[in-house]
Length: 410
Image (cartoon, rainbow, N blue to C red; front, side, top):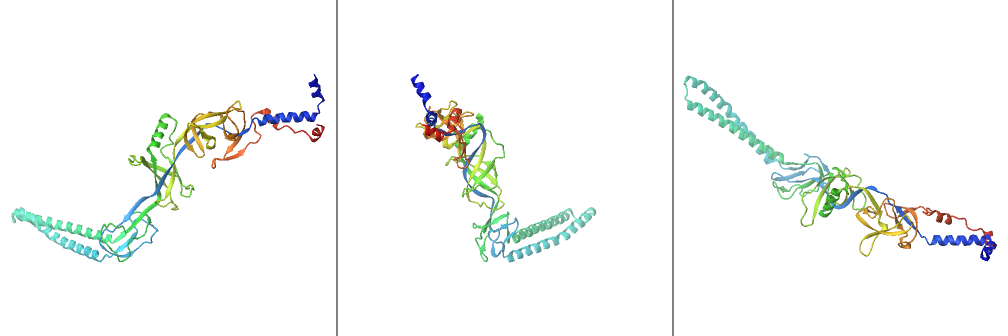
């Protein structure tokens, strides 16, 4: 009764101050932590693989006849069309050979009408027994020989014409022509080892990337077990360039090699990309981002929330439904941006601690505050201040402080 009487006689300001101190002590015993609420979602599984660009078509230009180069007919480093003239070899000797072959064909053709008339005449006379059968056979043989001579002469004309045409070297494909290895006045030979120039088709352009056989095996097993769903036959591919920027055009996967390299344990994937601005040159180092499939009903845990225990296991701290901190072991499958793809150890609605984990311990009560993670940097972008899960704690924290008059009464 004495203590109750003292409490009744205490000034109101002192009572309010004591209540505020008790509330502050309660809040201080429950530190605030930033959490992210996990929800199941469909996650696109991608692999970032190293690779190099390669021209979709490559043609090394070599002469097919011997001669002296008279002129170079193209500008180095420009686009050329298929069939466009590149070099002119001195055609004088080949023109003479062609003219000689044409004359030989005319000579051979001149003997055909006479032999044909002789055969027709003997065919009429043999009915009257005016000539022997042997004479008719000889006449027919002479006609056949004359026709064969004409055919051979025609073949010689065609050969001479082809060689004459080869004196003008043309582009076998359309593309960008490189530098010329020989200049005007140089002597070239048919099918020489040194190429005169090289033409590369750069639109579209290919990207050859390397994938490990282990990753391929893991991918096939995930599909078989139903953990991963393939995205379809037209698998899209993105490129990350050497300066870190993303190439503006998407490509598609063309094929995967049929064997694994025994030395490196990898196999080759080839993707094709449009290259209208010729931004990509053959031989450039790139990183290809390949969509391997879709993981349905999966969870993404921010990487900043995951650490390793003494056993090397991936762990994270959570605030459970009772408001207490607990630690769980996670099964990580893959890295997706600044998150880990987790297939066990989490459930729908779990709150993982991403900020303030150093101020709490397992079993301690904590006040979770929802935060937003920047997917680009992985850092906390936004905090919902005052969004405490415990209603009483919120009420105490938001209580009006004692007035100056009340304090003065104390």
